[in-house]
Length: 480
Ligand SMILES: Cc1cc2nc3c(=O)[nH]c(=O)nc-3n(C[C@H](O)[C@H](O)[C@H](O)COP(=O)(O)OP(=O)(O)OC[C@H]3O[C@@H](n4cnc5c(N)ncnc54)[C@H](O)[C@@H]3O)c2cc1C
Image (cartoon, rainbow, N blue to C red; front, side):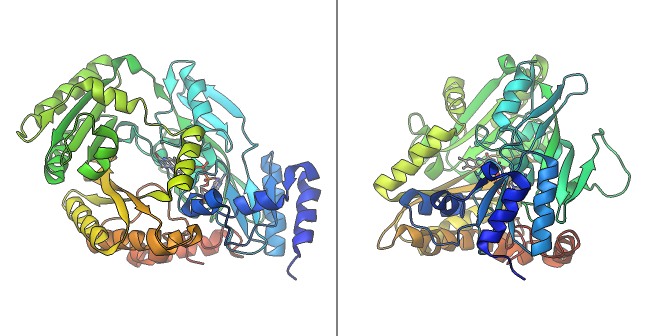
């Protein structure tokens, strides 16, 4: 029999103690969404059923006990750590869900400078782990813009990626081992070894599961030497994205590993570079880092390659360095952006996809053209590539619109989802992936079958095998 809201709260209080169970109505409403419906928080208008309780867990045993309770009573559980999700992964569509909050599991268990790895509980903000590593001359190499606010559990759960990915990779390249709890309360530890060939790599059942298979309690990630004194910055303006993609491709194919490799179109670049780039200019930029000889050779190699493109006009490296130093989003920047939206009703949204070198420019051009023609009230439309690989790159569409003739609660259906639809359709049409690094969440779940094609049954089988009662974050990744 389905438990009442009150019985769920009582159950959580018995397991965790009353002081670790939040039931404040306003907080519950705020926890019914994430940044996908951020206007609901900004304007205080909520449309989803609030969860029954926010359960603050302090240990793996408590996570196991909550998941056993949820499994026994068929209660939907929405895992949460930093709360910076952008794709609806934190939304509580199922009435009387439990928000399982790992934010208080915030201990850095160890920084092992000899074996070059660090272990942290799921609720450790990445910035704290990074600061601890830097204190001994090391870095995690992971630097998503949400670094000050996102936590290790969520970063692993979403397959996040940082600004230095072209050198260090995404989180999937950094995770050595981890601990997670599956529905029913089964605790799993995947040990820390440099590599193994003992069957499939089961880390990947957990990395990127978005809380739809299990709750991550602890992660171990690699560490690298931190040598910022060797950083070198390079930048050019140019007239076309097509040329920029060609130059980016050549750099990657030649085997150079800049930590940052970005290409901005005029729409997106105008937000950051109008003090040196013209209105129609694209901007191509790189950062080289690492041991001095490697950084120098990387910068020289990139310089040589880009010099082959007469369209590219070099800019002062100090301008690129200044831009770079202002890139990370802390809580105060997020609050200021929310305040700007409240004041102006002008909304900024983003969507990221990936494609190989043959298709990325076509995806970019087709999506931009359709958005421009089909979506009303746009004030800025553009994009940039920020994570490159030997076989392709990503595109991060960045767009702003004014809310015209609609309430903030209608923004998602009137503007945001129609734009996401166009981007997903054009990406799929050209053979790319509809999600590069923010996760599928609930927002892009309608396209997940098309994204996976004939491999979709593998995903469905994983869900049924690990979450047979369907209690884990219903509607996330797998459509509800
Ligand atoms: C300003 C801003 C900048 C951003 N920049 C980047 C960027 O540069 N790169 C990037 O990749 N992303 C970026 N993001 C997106 C977001 O920060 C990442 O998705 C991040 O990994 C989420 O971590 P979190 O701790 O906030 O997770 P949450 O928001 O709490 O959760 C995210 C998802 O993971 C699940 N989850 C959370 N914790 C756990 C757990 N312990 N076990 C299992 N599942 C869990 C949740 O259910 C949800 O589906 C940005 C977001 C914002 C708001």
